[in-house]
Length: 213
Length: 128
Image 1 (tube, chains in turn yellow, brown):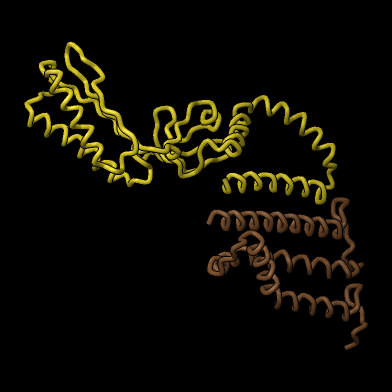
Image 2 (image 1 turned 45 degrees about the vertical axis):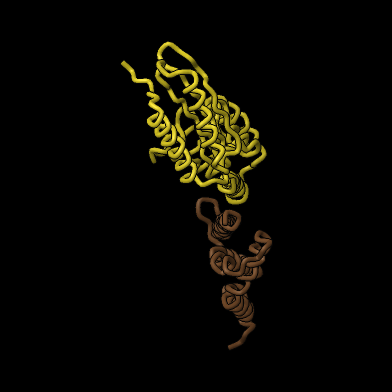
């Protein structure tokens, strides 16, 4: 935000400087000049409509604050960190380390998912179990996963249930929410642990997962 | 040498006074600039981090020095009468007018430069 206002006031200072030079060095009447410039300005504004829209959008970004520098956002299938919010565009460092420039108007008009503002991280798993598995085995599997999840204090909220009983496979749906205070590495370890526990249980109880073809 | 003797429409005493004022400004410009830069720093950084102050204040010292020296030079030189010998015209513009225009131009440039540097100075402090 500071950089934005610095650039904005710099432009204003340059304009004031030019007007002062015209007034005091070249003895031009600024009043007439400003009047004629405002007419020309209206014409220029019409031709530069998009640029002006971007500038206005930048003001909206600064006062509405949907995101700020350093936030992780998802815009138009691009996920990345905001590096700079300029007068015309917003620069994003994507997860592939490329550098994209998005016009501010687009940042205001499109849906921006500010990932940094989320309150919890989510682990979502769909265990696709073979149709040959019995209902009891499915119930045991779901109960086992519930008990495994309950062992981890980091998990704030969870739900485990058989979400689909289908022709091809049955599905056990698992959702866990983890506090943002937990480190990303611990989050990934937890996810891995749950997956490995599911595989181990299935192996131990001769439950097979769905195989395509 | 008579101090009241005239040189280019002005007594030598006036030139000496101006020289003394400019010399004093030249000697004290760094202290005055540091004072103003510190004042702006204190105004922006309420917590007043002394280490940051040391590393940032120098950014504003040079433009304040330049502006101060130019301002004092202009104010003192305006006390002098324009030399009659220099009253020449070029394309309907007198040399006095041309010099005044150049002085105004430099003054505006230095003033805007000072404001921009102050703006950058404030933005750096606020960012940190």
